Length: 75
View 1 (cartoon, rainbow, N blue to C red):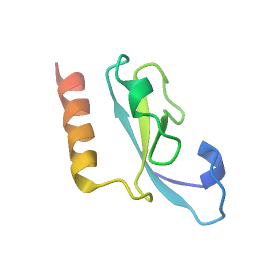
View 2 (tube, rainbow, N blue to C red):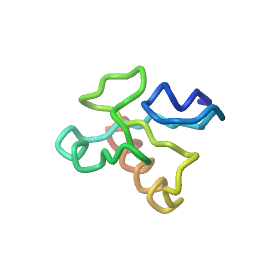
View 3 (cartoon, rainbow, N blue to C red):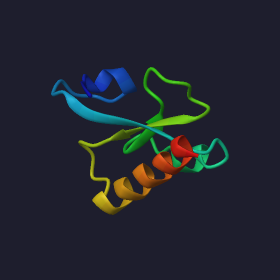
View 4 (cartoon, rainbow, N blue to C red):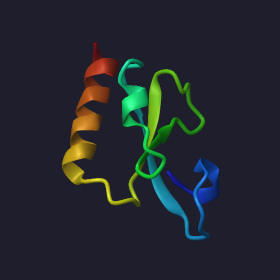
């Protein structure tokens, strides 16, 4: 989804791309860094994270997060 950076507490006017992914609640606190990964935007923050695709997060990291999300949702 494309939103204003203010929606997740960032500065700037140019819209950014976000991706919501399910994740295990035990690991979420270690993933949150307020630049690349945030508490979920418009989702249950206990089970979901938001990834800022407009940040410098690596595609390998995104792939790993997507795979874990898929595994959790598909189980």
